[in-house]
Image (cartoon, rainbow, N blue to C red; front, side, top):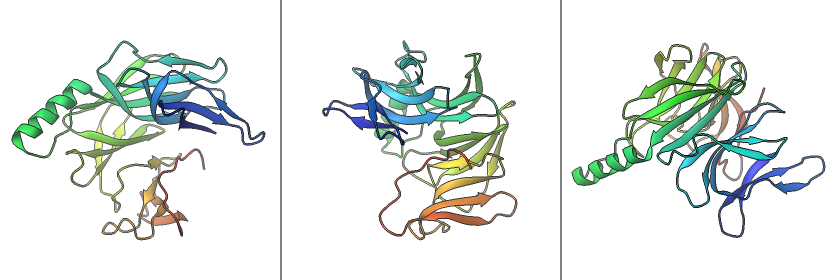
Length: 249
């Protein structure tokens, strides 16, 4: 198991926990914050969205589990922030959504001057082939925030918002090959922790079966695109589920 934890109140580092030996190992010492940890294959890299010490930009990082080394994608770029990361085993590819720091600052200034709700900067999705290391643009959203993203087979599932911290999320499927986007009407109101099923026939999500009260029956559900049935997978009885990750079925 891989996770992030604070070290000496100086920022987050990457750790591993061996479920058999119960051994904990610190794997990094040059990071400040880790927003995403996405596994790929048992032998393959971990993909992180992380901030280096002394910097502020969220970068895409590939951690090699064999050599214990980190590759920072476009390390020289101090403007583009990596927000969402999704690995697609059928494509052997990683998908990342990014936005411009300068673009976000401009939108914030506009909202402040107008005393209005902030509109997001542009977000773009890029495909990174884990084998060839080649990059390919998939889609760019104009003034629309990608809150969450997952992938399965030939599709990406995007959860988006047209305003920052305001309004209901929207859902859509994107054809990975063509970038064609199709809006979805879903009976949920979750903004994050939504994953395409491995067969692409539905989604697993953290939330509720009720759109009006997201705390009613809060837990992990499966929603089938064809039958439109929501099936509870795990419902919390005590405490609060903060997040979950779908690894396999």
